[in-house]
Length: 87
Image (cartoon, rainbow, N blue to C red; front, side):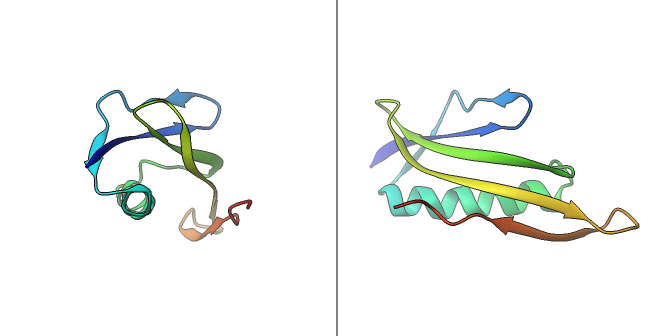
């Protein structure tokens, strides 16, 4: 098991100082996607573009995801567009 940290950046930085023990980088990516879904469901993510960085215990970026949260005319979420991960 390894510890992964989930940092969110938009116009501010929201740093994960405690991290989460997970099996590997693939599990960390799934956890990042789950976390984003939960934050959106709670309304913690407004209408903006932001980036989630997943880093390991040596502060190496394991993965990152860029999201655009767009709202409809009544403020309801239309979609989240996840930009493809560069190879």
